[in-house]
Image 1 (tube, rainbow, N blue to C red):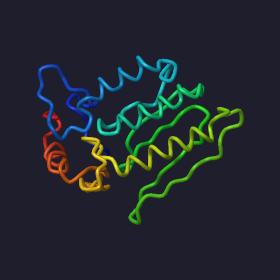
Image 2: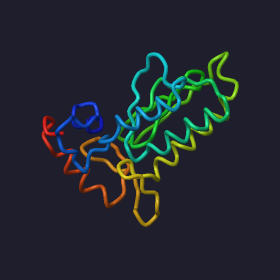
Image 3: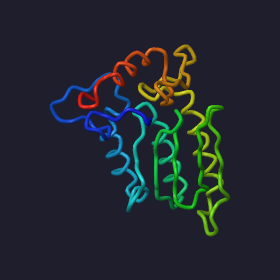
Image 4: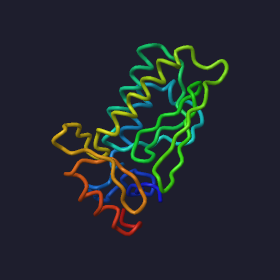
Amino acid sequence: MSGPAGNDGEGVATAGKAVHPGDLYAHFAEHDAELKARYPEQFQGQNLGLRWPDGWHTLVAGVCAYVAEHGIPVRWHQIKEKFGELRMYAEGVALRAEFQSADGATSFTSAGEEGSVPAAPTLEAKIREAQTASLQTCSRCGATDPSAQVTRRVLAGWWFTACDRCVPDIHAYVALPRDQR
């Protein structure tokens, strides 16, 4: 089971519909538009999907700012949540594949492509830093304070990272019938 979709099935609040407090993607359309306006060269062309939880927007924006600041020629292919962790895939950066089993998740990273982005090792480190931070950042509210008890959790086979305060709202949102999300 994948993570809960937003109000219109893609994480975008539908006009006239109240946003549920447990919707992890309630402000995604605004976040997506902000980054595309600020860093258009990073978001040109086709992609496999750009959709990250609201609480991780600062992490995604930080990586995009790093790319711009260092003049790294990057085009994002995919940005998403997977197994309760942020994933960012870009042209020229090593690919990562994850598999879920009864024993947990296993991941594999490919060697970088020939002709990959010159600063890719540095960018890969920045992406890994954001991924690691996502495991300590609530995917709904962005809380990082240790007292918030941010942990990776499982709900009906879907892994998500959230603080204790947000978990009840997320559970309530996921329990809604799909047409009410």
